Image 1: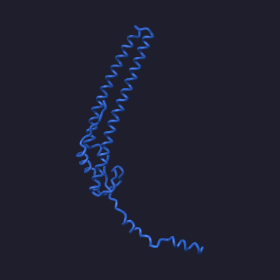
Image 2: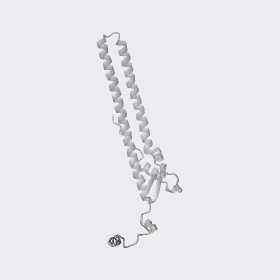
Image 3: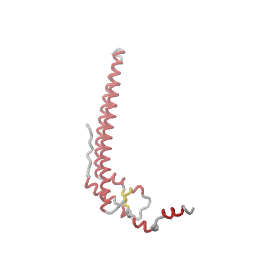
Image 4: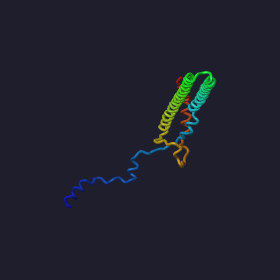
Length: 184
C-alpha cells in the first residue's frame, strides 16, 4: 500500500477547497421578477382586437353556415317532392347528387373553420412572442435575471417584484392591435 499512497498524495489538490460561503459569493446573484401572463393575455389591447375580430368572423361563419344549411334543406324538400314524380333510377341519381352536395358543404365548412382557427392561432402566437420580448426588455432594464409566471408563485413578500403592469403598458404601446390574416 505504500506504493499507492504517493499516487494519492499527488492527485490531491495543492490548494484547500473554498468554503461554501466564499463559493456562493463568486456566483452571480439571481434577481427574480414575476409577471401575470394570464392577466396580460386578457387585458392587453392586442388581444382585445383579436377577440373582436374573432367575434366578427364567428358571426360571419355562423351566417354562412346557416345559409348553406337552409339551401340544403330547400334542396332536400325539392328532392322529397320529386320522389313520386321521378322514376327510381332518376330519383336515386338526384339523391346521390344531394348527398354529394351535403358532403361538399361539410368539407368546405370544415376547411373554413380550420383556416379561421389557424389564423387566430398565428395571431395569438405573435402576441405571445411580443409579450416575451417585452418581458425580456423590462427585466433587463430593471436588472432582473429571472422572470417567472405569477401562476407558479405560492408566496411573494414584495409586490415590487411584479412587473406585470409595466409590461402591459409597454405591450399596449408597442403592439396596440393585431390584424388577423383571414384567408378568403
